[in-house]
Length: 184
Image 1: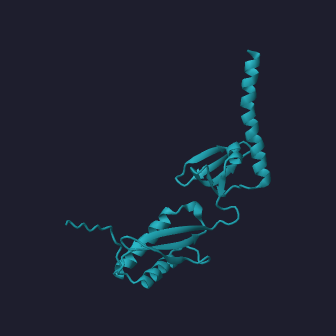
Image 2: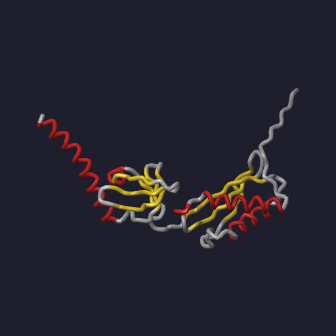
Image 3: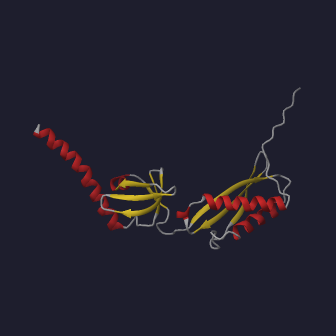
């Protein structure tokens, strides 16, 4: 019984010791700091709010907090989105009808980006033609923001709404998929 208890305690203490050693490594090498925006194991994305010797507290964008043992941060890949630069790129993809004036479409996209307060001036926004799609021309607006911890959803919604209003005012239509069926 004593041997089994010793082995059980040994394995349990091994994990605890591993978390503490991993915590000291993270605190010393400063690869992650409070305020960094990280993705852990491709399922947890948020802002580091607390970094302790045994665990890290990650505040997700929906307000929930995840306590992550430090051992996971050492053995798994972690994406630190703000390690050297807090700026983050946001892409907006949409499609316009083939009859649209593409130069006007691209200029309206840049104007919508310039009118939004969260969009950075440098690096400057870009509007590009991505491809000629099945139902229309695929275009992309690329913008940069300095506050990724505030999320992208509201920004995208504001930009899409501005583009919708500008497109309506300039008679630019967004196509919907259509199929032509011929019966012989």
